[in-house]
Amino acid sequence: MKRRGFIAGLGALWVAGCNKVADSETGSKLLSAAQDWHQGAHRLLNNREALAPEYPRSAISPTFRGNGSTDPQNGDYPRHAAEGFANWQLEVRGLVETPMTYSLENIRKLPQRTQVTRHDCVEGWSAIGEWTGPQLSLLLDAAKLKPEAKFIVFRCADDYKGLRYYESIDLIDAYHPQTILAHQLNGEPLPIKNGAPYRMRIERQLGYKHAKYVTAIEAVASLEGIGDGKGGYWEDRSGYQWYGGI
Ligand SMILES: Nc1nc2c(c(=O)[nH]1)N[C@H]1C(S)=C(S)[C@@H](COP(=O)(O)O)O[C@H]1N2
Ligand SMILES: [Mo]
Image (cartoon, rainbow, N blue to C red):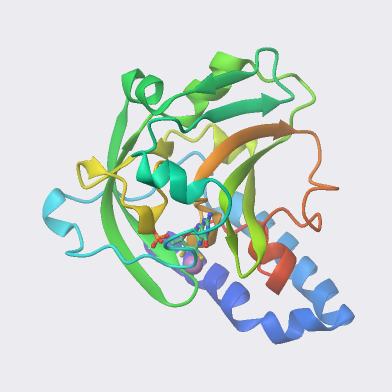
């Protein structure tokens, strides 16, 4: 446990402390080397399949703040919000044998996992919440990944500061048992500020990886050509590391 905390701290440091460095080209190279080192060290020290700590319900934070987008106003989102997300569709697509579309009702009928976990944002705050939803592995197995699939991309509904949010993870995190498509927080439908109707919980990753307002789950062979190719909104914009493992 202690070791994981240390590694998490290290990850946060790289991410939070190095935005300036990321602006220069040598800085970027340094950061990439650091990421390789961090990822390698993380693999060596830490089994990536290990569970993140889970907490008793008594540890749940009184309020779970919203961060980044908290009330998307672009596109169809306001209409869906007004309809209580009754017509929201979630697609599972890309390098899969059987592309799937789910309604919120379909998602609620699947086997669910509930977990009380701590969210760590690199901006320096944490919160504990209880999340419920189907495991991502279930959705991926239902659609059957093609052998070429190497990454899972999460498409989001919100433009944050004018740019569409997205994120991506590798298949180790995608099949981690605590990686779920959450539609409930603390036993209630997910609030808009926290990503309604769905947000990812990827408990072995830092906060920015937990995509909110998910519209599609896409299996791809490479992250090239998606956004600026670095695997996520903050990775493209601010040099946050793609691998934000904790
Ligand atoms: N679609 C989308 N997902 C997002 C963000 C966002 O702005 N848009 N912000 C990220 C960041 S930096 C954090 S810390 C968490 C915040 O989750 P919360 O709003 O539930 O606190 O969501 C992440 N996922
Ligand atoms: Mo964050």
